[in-house]
Length: 195
Image (cartoon, rainbow, N blue to C red):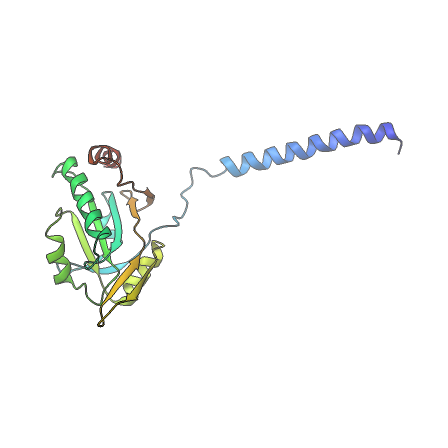
């Protein structure tokens, strides 16, 4: 093979490789883009609500929801988050079909009765859930939530936990982490798009 032939093969080969890369990129970008994709966040759960009834993720279908994991003895993040959600719901109005799900990561202390009393200070569309340690662990795993008991003095403890509020659509699919740092009016307007 002479130098002239080699000079012609190299650009043609580079062009062919570039075309193949472009075709692969387009295929991965657009192939089956309308096909439903499994969500990496969310999934089935079976827990007990503050009224004592067993609920599953199916009970929240048909309306968007905000999902948050915390516990009633939480000193700051949980009550602040629940207050912020209540303010957003107030801006939406009482007739809007939306819910918030507060899943306790402290099933040892957060019985349905404790959750009911605790949540009475917040919007009535916030549902408190608890259950067996295994059921709570399964729900936390489905939502990729970290939590662990942090021992304190005299047998007391706190719970370290993720503080993400998940926005789920009417079909129970994960939309995004919901931004509670925005003003309640702006957050209500954002949620309005999913009603």
